[in-house]
Image (cartoon, rainbow, N blue to C red):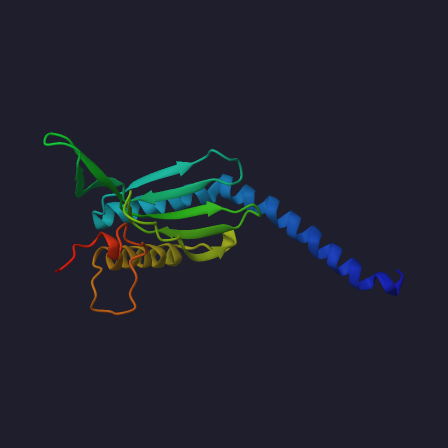
Length: 181
């Protein structure tokens, strides 16, 4: 082989290896990892009495996801449209997501709670990106613990910690506040 192409050949070989890995990662997801994630999360929900839904998103082949969602509820806040009609604000309670990436790796995300029509939702928090063989039971437990901690912190927001953000801008500013005079 010509020495001038040695480095290029190495890079081409690396590229081929990455493409091969993508196919293998996707196959592992289909054959075992997806079910393993669902089984582990289901057993964790049962063991902890956490009320949550476990959904599989299959809209896009090789971009599937497993979503542990805490669901949606009335937020307790509502707009009085008339004396008899109230428009409730819906609160999305947050979710933990395991989603395939384009390259077959798995991204783990936390979607924070948010209240519709009450500011902007906080962007999802990326916990990590894993190759399928890296995802083992201790990681799932750690993800669930981090998820519950983040959701609890969001729910327990107050001004005791000056730099703590709840992840949304309020939908009213100083111009909407009553004038004290």
